Length: 447
Image (cartoon, rainbow, N blue to C red; front, side, top):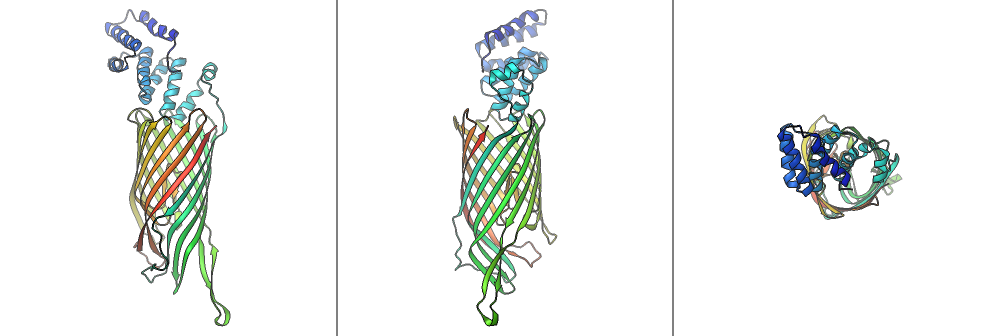
């Protein structure tokens, strides 16, 4: 697409005859911007057209020239408001609709692009070979394997306290993800997902002078989620996510033999059910995406309330470079009526290395415990603290196939501590620091 037809150029030129009776400023702006447009002098056209708009010289063809000037430089986000304004002057113009559609797509605003399709005449959807499908529209599968770089030796472990309680230290775990995207309409989409976590961990517990040290305790978790996103207005989206987590930890007890016979340590699974709800609002505004989110959860027998503020920035007006900054305030309400409050900061930087390879670098800093991330799609419910995490993602979309391959490496600094079941303070006993690494690989398929 991307080049105007000769007929359309003649239409742009023909507008000179219409405005012959207008003021010299109008004539000057129209004539000079048209000449710069023909020369493809985009850097000269932009300030001149903007100066005319400041003087209330504003009309369809001026907005089209200005939008095309930004578009041809790959500044799609800057082009969007001018194509929108051009369509305010002439809502049925096919070239303005086409340019706006691709500006939305190339700036990452897929929901707006999808909604715009509903206004296309059949001739334009046929030209662009767009199929407006409803129903199941995408699948994704991911798998993460994580391992401990500083494993704890059972021979050297000591809790250092006499109170009843327990302590866990992860050794390794595997997390499987399966997700479905369901397009209900141009404005509304649902997402469904299942995750299975299987974790091997060092486990120690003591109670009433009896202690249990299990070097290879197995912990499993099933997780289901439902998410929905609706385009409430131009550049305005509202999302909600609900998670159900079924945790299956082991409990240990001692069965003593009759008459002084040998005792045996037995275990049983003690299921726990947790819920997470997340609500967010996002607004596109020029080079920025502003967002706010609220999460409420009851992870690990505590209640959490989390507030997020998110700012995404696209300095080049496209997806070649972007940053996403998020600051979260979390309040955790303990059963002993105490409250722990803290902040978490998350930063993402994405860069297009070359076509079709993107790299994302991500860091999270703070007490990452019972934390909701990625717009409510990722839950950190590990009982031990993640003090910081650093990650690097490689994203490889296969152009024209609807496929996207994803590989991520992550490094975490963790801290385990002994959880007392009898103290009424928020003191943490026997801290043990260790590092974790993980690798994630997956594929997304957009139908």
